[in-house]
Length: 308
Ligand code: FO1
Image (cartoon, rainbow, N blue to C red; front, side, top):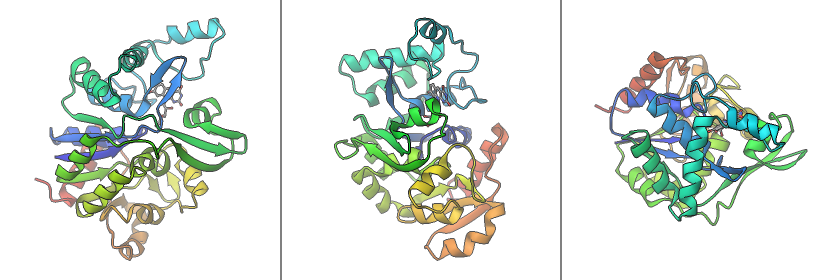
């Protein structure tokens, strides 16, 4: 079994690549981006994973369903209601079903399993790291806001001072996530934003402790090339947390739980310093611009990890 620790819009690329190499694939998903919007419970990272594996993700945007329409949103605008978060008409149904099932007492993990298996015929396990609502908050010079308010509503313009995960201390991690970590042959930390996509998962003490025990079988893929993020606001969040935005900074950040890191060829000058952290680095082209590159990087990782 292969498990991917995933979140954000970048993770789905390696998930798709791995899915083209193996059927034994599970995903532990970030929940920090989840939020309530106009009475709907939105789980962007879970949905990106479902739509990506179902082959209906809008690859250009990296979120939502391809060829979706926005009539619901047009109507919200017409009525003077909140419409800054672009929920497509088909995407709306996922949020609607989820919210309805939550109101009937079903857990987020049970709902996710049902939507993925029954509605979208996905055989991989998609496991939200917790069923408790945890919210990534961005502290900025314009105030403390939800991650979607920062990224989408305010277009990432305010200065980031800090990032924290509201409710994380009260959250109980999902037992299925612990079980899958213990039984996996390989665990891959996706090339995602370390602070907003991966850290909410690692901030659950039981998950972190279990990952530390499995260090030998954990490989991280760098979300940074040079000093730039492959996509999104990772650099702003890393700076706010005092973490160097380079593959060395990423290797340091994950060194307690990852024994290996896959970095871009152009960052090979960092290999020696990474080794001093007791982390082995492997160099290749880590950009994934199409299905061929996704499969190529996935195969490279499986080879590095000696997975047959
Ligand atoms: N990202 C945007 O930049 N603008 C949007 O209007 C937007 C809507 C949206 C709707 C559903 C969904 O699942 C994701 C959506 N995203 C949108 C992506 C989302 O804000 C983030 O990229 C993820 O939370 C990153 O993890």
